[in-house]
Image (cartoon, rainbow over all chains, first blue to last red):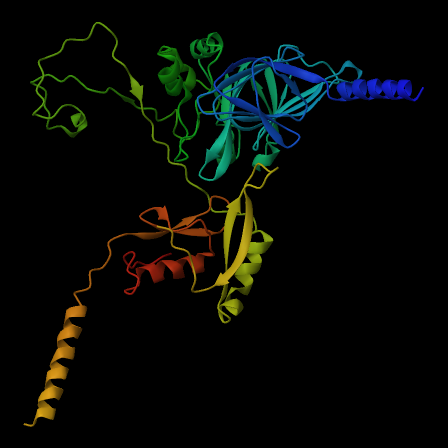
Length: 368
Length: 84
């Protein structure tokens, strides 16, 4: 009697556990190495492994993973990426899904369009994207100590929540072919930096199923031209790319209006006047080349645009710790007491937190 | 001149000789100290040739003090300059 009750209780418990922790999808393709963080422990991930709510998937360098969820949503991660399935529930048949791209490159296709009452959100440190039935690429990475996010929408529509950026515009819609960077939006304090990719380039990315978005901001914080970046990663996508970028909605600061075309390795004629400064980029007198007729194949055109981003002086009040330190500085100096700050990303948070510590005024670290 | 005087002169000469050997001509560093503002907060890092000296941030006046200390003759990590 007791044994039968125990067996029934065990079966009930196991079925309950499996119900609560139902698989939400599985790994359909894995190249390289990946691991899943589940209940605080990391274990290697393999092809056909199941995925569960709250899993955090990490990919190693030179690795790629493709995951297919039960609702046919496809999630692809590039190398050194981290992605969390924060919420995945289907109560009353309605999906409530929240995904977080912690870092790295993501390509996702939501095949089943979200119905009324359903919510599918992809978030990064900078922006939250509500998707309907879309395919898009996004990157999130660190530039100059701050997380930034790039988004390119391939199909469908996205409602972006930019309230974390501190701009006057809190939410905005993104249409297919449009792309933006959150750092640039925050700098511009508006949406004028949202651009549109040319149809040719867009189709190229759609056709290249495992392509990811190149980083739009380089290490120096300069916004790159996506058309040129795609040309180098996917091959020449045609002059339409540049035209398409130029016709994008709201030309960015100097990026489109001032686009210059530099023809590298100009083949100059012997008789050309090389003393002219405008031809300084042509060959020096030592590099004499025979006269060159117009080439039968169109030369490679590389655009280079240097965008200087001017950081505006902070107009908002200082945070409490900084304001207090400024107010007390003179008094504390007499006691040889000063402060220093450092920034650190604490677990569970995606933005660097600021920490203040006290020091002797004549003490500082010199790490060079 | 007795031997005591000779000894005293000898020691004095030796001290002067050693002192002159230890102090060579001062060569001012040509590295450039600068302040780098945090992109969000009103805090500054001290840089030498655009490389931060540490991962810490300071109030502007404190950062200027540190930069001036680095540019001092005793430390000589960079050339003296004025900061705005």
